[in-house]
Length: 339
Image 1 (cartoon, rainbow, N blue to C red):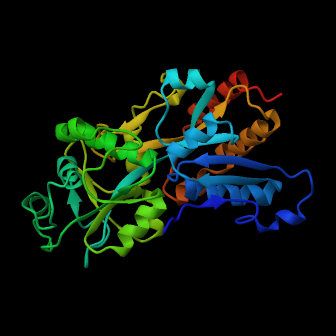
Image 2: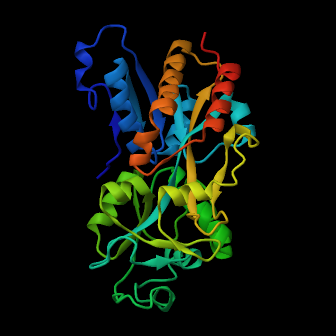
Image 3: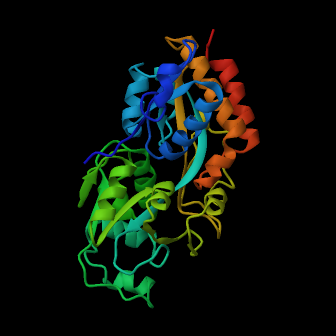
């Protein structure tokens, strides 16, 4: 069952029919990673301004295609586009929030954070080389745990996904085998496993399948009360996914010095760093077909930067630093034609 969601004036915002004619709904599509916070922001923004956000949570690959086709005001992707791709399509790119991707498991008696995995072991699981939960490689990392002699069921994304990009980018950095056999992208040829659409679909499949492991943005694990694993980071420390750990991963990020603010935060150093962190990005045309719609979208994101930090933190996203937000808004003024 597909569980992709859409924030719409007719759905989340059921009062559209009684709004004044001046109310504007903003259209966007893409990443499922930020859907929980975009939904929360949209609800608050609708109540404050009367303007809704029609956001299709279809995956980063779909968001990139829709903005390239000019069928939405903005696209959303967790994989930042390279400078050449942004220039080719006349796009501006900027991050909204940061978060973390976590491995989630469905094992009887295992609570969140009770299982530890490291990068090479995680890669071997998703390569299909480690097939059971009591494999010596997993048992070595969890000496005190009673791991079952149960087959591992791998669940991965079936759609073009920025969450998959972050996950596979991390595996490519910690496993030479993964890098050579599979690589990093929004969509890859998965060696094993069940495919599901969206963070929602992976969360649903793992929740329903005993012995399974998948990967989702942390807000989905938290909202669905799923059992995440700890991960051993680049400094050899087993860490929990927390806002502080996601922030630590971004400690050395050079946002302003990277074209399109396109920083990737996987396998970053630091004792407290979460290994699979990243920002989620918005893509907009420099010369939009509908300048008024683009102006409304920028009003929404300006509001989110100024009033949405607490809401983001409640879902364990990390707001962008004020200096980065200042730089982003300067880019809007200079590069996006809204008049």
